[in-house]
Length: 438
Image 1 (cartoon, rainbow, N blue to C red):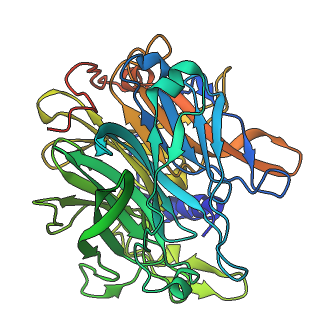
Image 2 (image 1 turned 135 degrees about the vertical axis):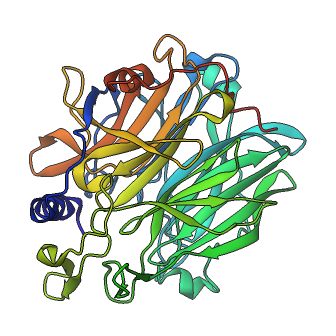
């Protein structure tokens, strides 16, 4: 279902149910990246998911690495200017699907070829692989392209049993990475399915490969309090997929946004998935729906809503991020795509909801709509972002270029988010170092 249709349905649902929640506070972005366009002239570029790499020598030279789906990957400086573009892999055959980069995350200090190496890890939805790119600080300092493909040549599909199955496109979709001592891992979700897989990265003669450690299947249907069974809205044959994910590096907890269901918490113990807990539900949870075959979309029966949904997320639940603070404190952020807001939860304990914010228009940038991916870091990034940085995907970059719909990424100082709340959120720039993997 399109983001605009979801926004309309959410508004109708709120009117019917009378549901209310505190109004989101407003913050403004300081920097934006160039708009990209999902057409032939724009190279079929569709911005989606960002990650932040922290430069070990000069944090002011840190990078934002972001996916553009069919167009591959862009690398930006903290001023929003493009520093490097990497194309997605070409199709391996005439009838095969080309590469399509969906989500990205960063791990610092992976032992590769006998050298500590920072990696950008990307889910290649088109080819059902994880792609690895080494990040070279010396290249950043010298103004050279900093990313280099170090994926092992024979990397196998993450989910598909054969190359023919890859082309069915039930492939690697969402991705979150983390380190544990000298080991690095990625959690990958499967498009159109509820499956999530944990992979361990491997150094194979100076190239990055991976092997499966564990697999988790989240629920596809749910028993409601009235004992009826409810299945989330989906196209025929599809299931309630996960895309937005983040792993709490210190606590080894996975947070996974199942788009039409809500936000899951899954502990990772000895590189295995523990029992998932649904910590928040989308507003549409439990609402009946039918499928309009002519329009090829779900039609939600807002009048029949039984009132079992949450109050903080409007489908799709999307990008998730962790803001670290001392003693296990900090915040879990989740994109509420259907109403263009971001929900904020406590990182510790039962992940209590604290409030929501929206990134709105300012003199410097337009606001953020229909956001998919999100990333946040607490550490100072030079003069540009001395109190930390929030990066959000914007699914509707304006002004539009005629009939062309643009997308891009917005950079917001964390202090703008923290200070917008009636009770300000914590700003802690010292207690967590993303390079500390112990």
